[in-house]
Length: 118
Ligand SMILES: Nc1nc2c(c(=O)[nH]1)N=C([C@H](O)[C@H](O)COP(=O)(O)OP(=O)(O)OP(=O)(O)O)CN2
Ligand SMILES: [Zn+2]
Image 1: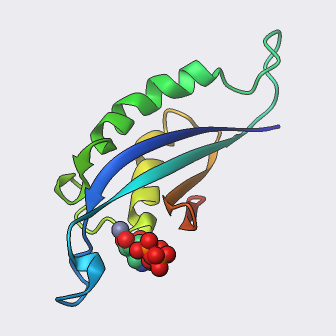
Image 2 (image 1 turned 180 degrees about the horizontal axis):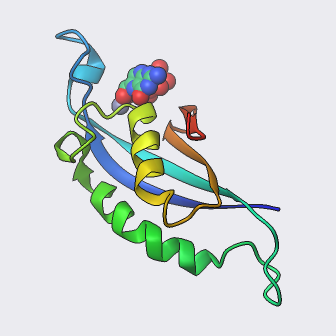
C-alpha cells in the first residue's frame, strides 16, 4: 500500500554556478511543493500504513527550516537545485520514516525532481 503527504513552502534561492546575468543566478522565489511517498503494509487495527500525524511530527521541523527562508543559507543547500533539495529532505527524514520511498520536489507546477535514494 502506498500513501503520500504533501507540503508547500515559500522560499527564495539562486543558483551560484549559473553565469552572470542568467535569471537563475539572481535571487528569486518559488512556491515549492514537497511530496513524500511511503510504501508499507497496513498496520492493524488502524488499517493505515503510517499515521499522517506521525509524518508531520518528523517533517515539521524540516519544513520550518525551508519555509520563508533563503535556501542558499541553509547548511547543505548552498546550491539549491530541486535535485539537491530532494536529496537533502530524503537524508533528513529517511531514518525516522523508513517506509519513505520517494521525495518529489516541485520547483514550479511544471518542473521538479523525484528522488528515491539514488
Ligand atoms: N534540473 C534543474 N534545472 C533547473 C533548476 C533545477 O533546480 N534543476 N532550477 C532552475 C531555476 O531555479 C528556475 O527558477 C526554475 O526553472 P524553470 O522551470 O525554468 O522555471 P521558470 O518559471 O523560470 O521558467 P519558465 O520557462 O517560465 O517555465 C532552472 N533549471
Ligand atoms: Zn529557481
